[in-house]
Length: 424
Image (cartoon, rainbow, N blue to C red; front, side, top):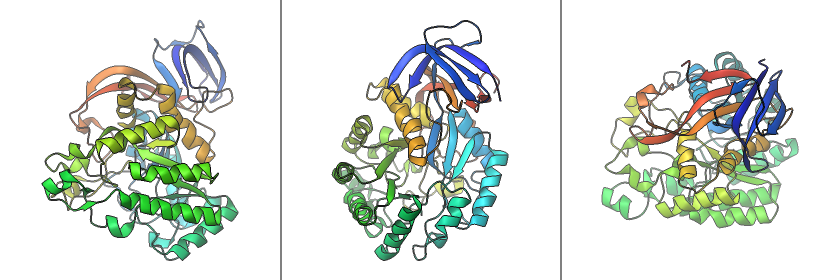
């Protein structure tokens, strides 16, 4: 563990909502002291921003089964370069993470290969097929931080209610994908004029509302802890507002792509913009930004989903959904800061503090005794993104060739430097 003093830094504190010039001392892998103003000695940060490391809830890694798309080594390197100090992985691998044995394999692989912290989610039902509950208690003991079937929505309400009831007895968190599977099956874009002009199969935003309303009714019935992985439409927000007002243990996330892109970015069938759920209208995008600012949506995540060239170089309707996002999460989020739509403390509340709180992790804070998981970044540094420079094995980013602003200079995990742009 590294002992260090970092001074002349803009301290971005999501707990207090402050953005002040100050210093921070690291000792034995944790934050030992923190203060405002300047302090001599140590490393001069040159006025750059120092914030809690990002905790990315919902990362897909290709192990086991799709290592050619992403491995723990490449995902860990991409995370470190993107200021992500904890990756919370999804179980939607080719061999689903639905038994303690598979979870133990994944946990060991992640710890061995990735330079950042790694926390796995496990499947809610066996093989993610929505018919039989996994061994939630054993999976919790093996290290699962939450349970999800990803974008395979459980259609049997009785099965889902049993899962929620049992998870409630264990205090376990269920992460769900709020979509009506019948309405959204086969959809490539959001319904509307753009979809009609392009002749693409579409889904109504109401599919998200219907899925969320159903899930929240079951949460009310069972008392389960629930997190909606991605809210992307204005239609879903009233249900979320009512659930929180009623005191249900409910949180929600949004992907960085739904915060910074809209349906028109698909343009002439550009498959790197095909994500799940599909990109929405500009009105929906702005509503999501406002919901993050107001705290209605709690978490911003990358929904990192690597896909190989063969699955993306297809007609739009047939192409695989998903985009990589570990390295682009922070510079994309800084678009909202530069547009004066969200402050840096508000961004890191959603990217660091809130995911840590929801998962019961000790990070996400600039406070004494907190882990020294930190990101030092220049919010103003301009660059043009070249997807072939990304550290992920797969290069399917919608931001390829776009002008971005904001570069990570250093990433610390437990006080150790796991990424240094000057040395990269």
